Length: 222
Image (cartoon, rainbow, N blue to C red; front, side):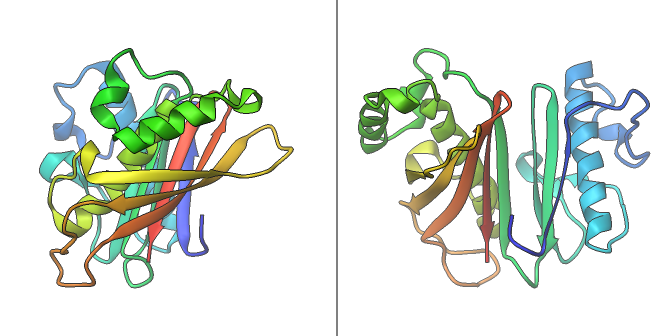
């Protein structure tokens, strides 16, 4: 993450972790898994707020379930099996942040066609022809990058962004590390006027990593 972005993650869920009292009503009727994901991700967000020198306040839920950040803060939450995380920054430094985490496994059958464009599927076929990286599930990486793109888009526009509304391309780092890493570019295919009257959005750039059984994608838009 760039300097100025505070991050926190949970790899093991603390047994005594409780929701902020002002958040309990948001999950009062939720099943246990939903409660854990909600509580864990917001716990990470408060740890990140502390890193930024901000008060560890309750984090509400807005339209389409988006977190409601304290004034002057931008950020993103994510959770997947056995993992919750948050990334936050001051709005005066970055316009938006979008992160997503997914299990490192193939998408369910039939899902790829509904979340991808034809050029993206062509790229996936070419990648799968490379035996050196054939064990990496780039179909799930594509989905994960689309989710991060939406999370970076929504706070700036308050408009829906469909899977078909962003064309994502990837690079793969040359590395001897156990983790696979690289960058991605999300080319927005719809008008990107923002609700704050700022510079219209045309694209996002992000990074990805595959390791420890999960995929992580992150966009920090300045």
